[in-house]
Amino acid sequence: MPTVRVMFVGQGASLLPEDRFVNVFHFHDPVVGDPAAAILSCTNVLEDLLTAPVSGGNALSSFISPYVSRTATLIAYDMLMPKPRIPYPRSITLAAAVGGGYAEEAAIVLSTHGAPPITARRRGRMYFGPLSDSATCIAPGTTSLPARPSSASAAHVVQALTAFGAALILESGTIGMPWSIRSTVPDENYVQITGGHVDNALDTQRRRGPSPTARLTFGT
Image 1 (cartoon, rainbow, N blue to C red):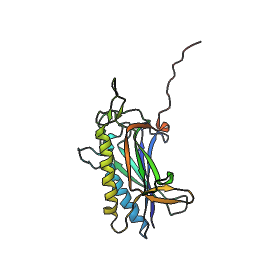
Image 2: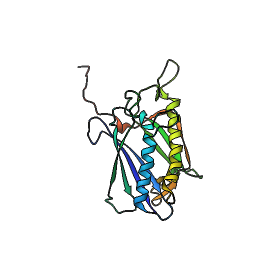
Image 3: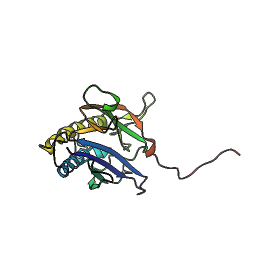
Image 4: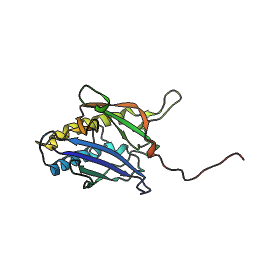
């Protein structure tokens, strides 16, 4: 019963550990399988999710800000091993960014859920970013409309994740590694993701914002 965690780690240009952008994926196989093969399958498909072009010609990672190094890391763990778990890192190359960098806190949010009943413990969220400022990724605000994810970037996220879910089954063969939501209540458990949505509104991850490097003062 392999259970795999894969962390996507993008490094900001400062090269400092606190300047990293992380997304976490969990995969859970309800039947007996080989953990080593499961880790390979999950990282293969996750690399494809980020770097393979989808309809329209852009890879999902092309919407990631150029402030993030185009050499990123996938770090996998066998969750059934006792702590401290052995990390299995894999270097991947992100697609060239489609424009400059947007505010690091801004993200396109992916909401996921398992099969009904869709309770709080059967839902998850992922913050995709930091983002490019290209009109391909962000529709800028106007006198009548706020800034939003472009219809193209939202569609790319949905298309890529649909292919991602299907590829997990194809790549894994008889192992099968469904993308899952991890919960620790009442005990550690995993819910297979069956669907989700991407809103046409930006959200924020405050922890991704840069620290100030200067201060202008006023008053006496």
